[in-house]
Image (tube, rainbow, N blue to C red; front, top):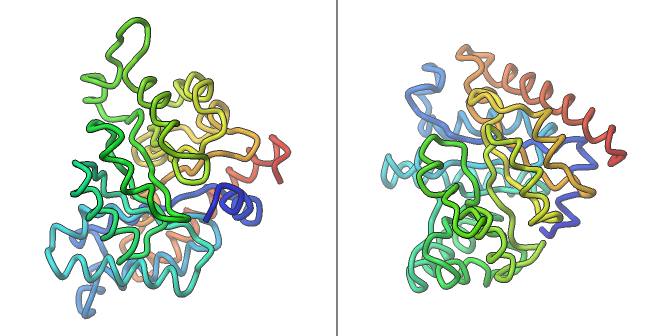
Length: 275
């Protein structure tokens, strides 16, 4: 899926919503625990209820690999289900990998070849040779960590040298590694005011923006500062959708929450004359 196709899906659905499938087994409705694979059953019902309102799903790999082989089975089944039933939806492995070249090559093979994800989040700290293996796959994306919203982001990401902050250096240099069709950036929603300056460096790239919803980020501010002529945003919400209800109607409520966000997104897309 390239840059233009992603934008076309946004226009078609009037949405730039990405739903995080951070599916903790301790939080899913208890009646699902009788299923052979409770996590997959939970994900399946959430996906079926929300696919009309989202253009992307983002399973956080940590919530699966913590259960060993069983967790990997749930993750693989989830990705396969999306690809078989909703093939136009973009699927991101929130894995935050990044290591020396040979190791990155194996990570890329795991997620972009054997598990059929469209994209993977990658940490840039080890530089270009740790990123290049992920960029060797056609129609696959690297989602590079640029500016995160956690408290610890202040430890390194805002380090200033000669008037250039570290996250700005990441944005500037990494553009030489990839293109608009295979690289986007993570920028936390709780730092939405920084999007204005970020757009000066990467005006045309897509940005994956977590932190809207339970983490307190403002969708209005993200759209105001981050939207470009091709929308250029995938805004993620996880807990506020998937864990909005714990009853037998959890999937219906998840769909309603996703629709609420989609309706707000439609408003901002309309204001920019993108739909």
